[in-house]
Length: 404
Image 1 (cartoon, rainbow, N blue to C red):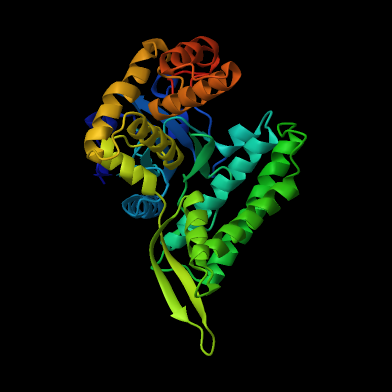
Image 2 (cartoon, rainbow, N blue to C red):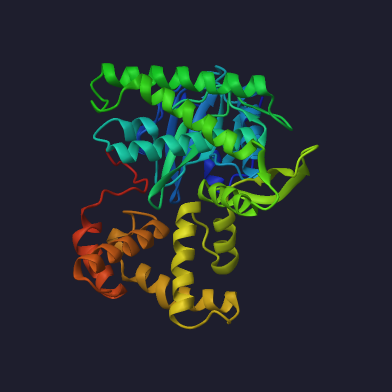
């Protein structure tokens, strides 16, 4: 069977990789040193023309199946890695059959949860990690996706303003349905509890877990946060007809959790003056979509919320509330966002992605202004941030040959 690459590879050089060599024997010059979680399969990272790819060696059946699942999840705008191609028909130089390979795009500025938990971790950071993982599982279940193997190793996180965003990495055991059943949902979260508890015990046994983290408590808190979020998104709420402000409160809570409300279902409870209200929740991304529409910036949800807040402040400060929103957004890009990004020295661009840089500059400006008792201005905040903060940050972009 001839070598075949199926998918949508963006770089023709992918086919020129040494597919006749088992992945674990690939030469060092082909590989990128990046942290990764524990996997049942051989996984390696390679860089071609500036783009980093993750390659997993797996049987042809499961490689094709996982490719289709990841493609469907991306089509549904679910947080997951992007599939690139499946390589089949691999043979060694001696004619031995080799497993197929699944190629995905590496998620830049991301790390496995294991890498984050293996070290000093403040309690508030841990809470954000818990929330990110719980939100990921809920979003997958709302899509109708049964994961089957939720674990820290199968998850990546990226910084999202002051929080974290979690992404599915491994969909090998997953199933996509029009709607997930209650049995599947409860089994999925039970598997997540067991896997995460076991992984944390491994970290603890290797003295890689911060002493403040209790593996059992951590695993149980993820389950608790998942159920609390799921109930918030799916439960009915009975209100008096005059208490419509409670509906507004419910919508605000959902927005705070990162979910949009497409419409409300309202029905009257028989024999009473009460109404039963249930919001129809759609996937997260309200702020992302608005920012992308206005500016063309494609960023994480919390980053988008932060940038839109600054855009709104710019609108009010310059008396542009009655101006067309697209025109104001264009001015904000040209007069605020781009000058900040352009002020970052080229050698520091790999420290953080642009939206995160801008967010941290705004945070730094706020702290400086609080200390000074007045607004120090954006230009001063940028200079101070570069000299006192950014220069000391580790690179979060994938760098070939880096020891992380």
